[in-house]
Length: 228
Image 1 (cartoon, rainbow, N blue to C red):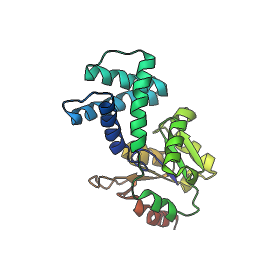
Image 2 (cartoon, helix red, strand yellow):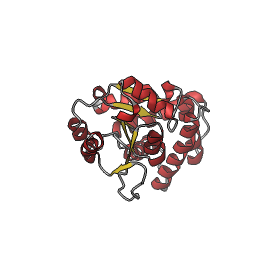
Image 3 (spheres, helix red, strand yellow):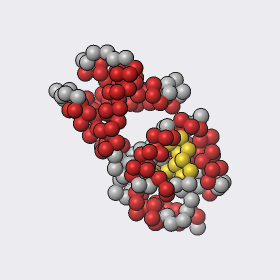
Image 4 (cartoon, rainbow, N blue to C red):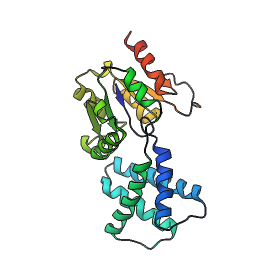
């Protein structure tokens, strides 16, 4: 069994909002519309992180790009690289303090018992390793494969197959669970795994090509159906 991290195991959206607003408060910036500030920050994250995944920026570079653009949106003076790094470090500390596991994670991992587990994430490996360690679940996973270390990113089949190789299990015998239908579930299925879409909103349509669950509590039963 392989898992995505953000939005699947950890509540990224809630931590992102809380971390940004706390950081702006700490730095003395009070946006007139906090929701607009969060929306802008999320749009910047999507844009600059996509450039990181595509190899256009390194991990630190996408952070600086996000910080610089956000400071510009807030009307703050431009900063050099050191200043951008410092600003983002403040945000990162506030974000990390707000990161929590979804309530269904621990029970799901317990129910999976001795099944070999791993992580596949479009991120920096040390960043995700530290996050899972703070959440107290790093030792649950036998492998952690991230685009920043693997040189290949989801939805490329190679990153899924690399994780299967690290687990020592053929792709056809592995399930991959993620919160994005195309980049996670369908991409894993295209790589020969069983793709599972975790639709936490519960409003998506049942896809014809991959399994869909709305809570990780449903996963152990699904595993039983697949391996029957």
